[in-house]
Image (tube, rainbow, N blue to C red; front, top):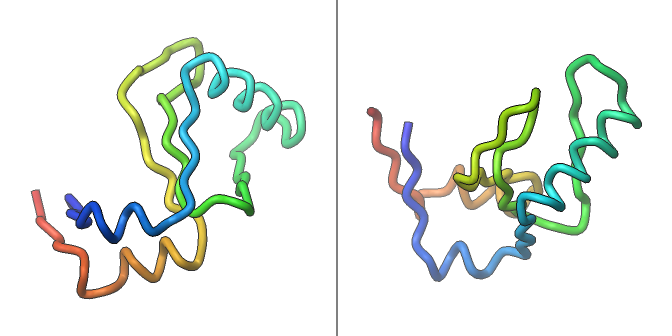
Length: 86
């Protein structure tokens, strides 16, 4: 499923972007806090986190977007977002 969000709507959300080094540091911090099992961590002060994918010794410089607030969820569930099944 591909979600297409208009830039204007996207820019209204509070965002943070992590570079690769900071993403690695955050991954290690969260791992120490929550152990080796599945981890669920929310940055309460951001609607969206953009970050390279990091984990298990592999790193991908492509950005992932973590939509994590009620405002972000409301936008994704609204009729403002085009949904394309791939």
